[in-house]
Amino acid sequence: MASRAAVTLVFVLPAIASVALGGAVMAQMLQEPGRGGGAGHVSLVGLEGSYAAPAALSVSVSVGHDAFDCGDLDIVVRDAGGQTVGQGGFFGQCFALEGTEVPVGGPFTLGIEAPGEYEITATMTDAQKRSRATATEAFTVN
Image (cartoon, rainbow, N blue to C red; front, side, top):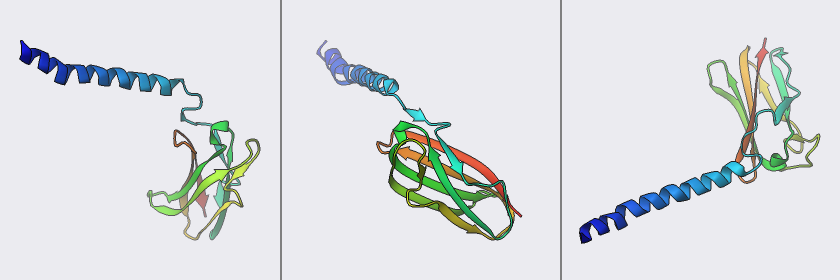
């Protein structure tokens, strides 16, 4: 009988405690406002649908959610084959909430010489690394 109590104490009770604690943590996270994806919270500003080669891309990102008043911005430009053509990381972007565009200090710029189809993705991550918002758009260089 002692071995059965030891098995219960060593294996079963920690499993039950682990599930209960994990459930409590998940319930707390699900109740936080502004959690999860931020579709519609960021948009690309200044991007045209078509450029003449060589193209001078100049883009800012408009942020429209208070969860992202400070955070990190990552901008990646890829060609039709998925190869990265250019990227920029802007860390610690803090700004006033309404009407402000990032990156702070000026737009993201990139020169593209080769004609083709391209895609630009801007991802804003909040300062606590809990929420992320992404905007993706396609453009052409002729």
